[in-house]
Length: 172
Image (cartoon, rainbow, N blue to C red; front, side, top):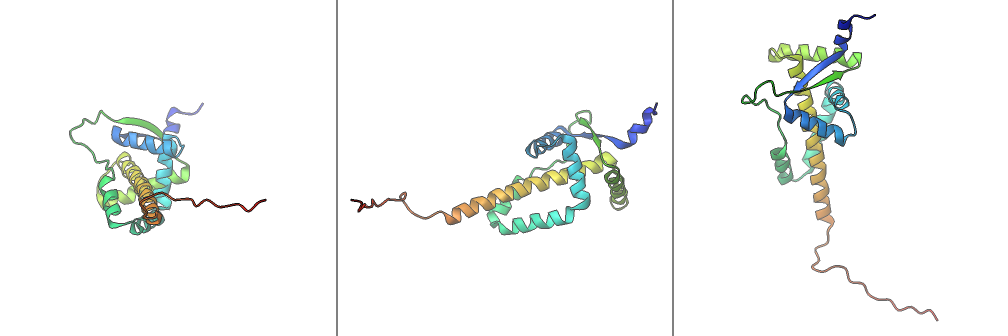
């Protein structure tokens, strides 16, 4: 029979503020994933594709109008800690990572601690998940803004709807 402590290394209890958990659940619903799947996706994207994704987002934003860019940046949610709320008000979820992702996450966490000071693994995971949620929000809003601008640019400037000219048929 395996020891009960043996399974604890592959599972992490992720504690987050309710606002972050709600945003995470909403993003998971949009992507048709579980909350655990969304957290794993966030970590995977942050570890292995972050530079490419940031470049894509920046290029998308550069394609939008300055007004749209400002609107997107103003409406971007933040998931900062609220010092007024007690630490007890946290939502918990168990997260399991593949072995390679888990070891890469822990290595990135160690590197982050060296450059930014003490932070818990849970706090580091919050930073990663917050980045993913903000990234996803900004890309979705940018796509909406670009679509809206495209629709406005191809819409004819007519005061009345199309008029149809009746045709006369020469069928005998």
